Image (cartoon, rainbow, N blue to C red; front, side, top):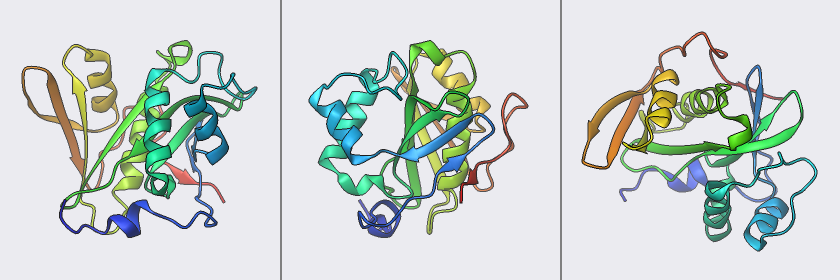
Length: 191
């Protein structure tokens, strides 16, 4: 990986608070370290988690965070919290950048799919990622066998730029196009 300011983008001292990203229906909040540990350890569901959180992808992300705790910085991994209930319903996050491009991933638990949460979270984190120093492109990959995930990225303002026999690659550059009218236009930092 080229020197791309990873330390200044992804890593933040543990005592530095990370601002939430807020949309009309969601809060994207940095994972609490105790919840990362609970997911990695396979502990029972916490009361503020949706009944089907953590899903398999959330367990993978919690393991990634446990191995790379610096990814809890402002341009790192976040939980998706449903504002109406206060429940954690998924995860969205950015991965260390390379040459001005930062990749992100997302997942919403089955009980909350079909509500546009994934597109809303993807747009919010992608728009926020484009504010990072030295970042000019956000990207994401989806399996061709998952057309719903590809539609999430399109609704979030990304464009399919390539594909191979298994994966499609999407990206957007600053400024990110406005999202479809099904969810709010841009993330806002909570104070």
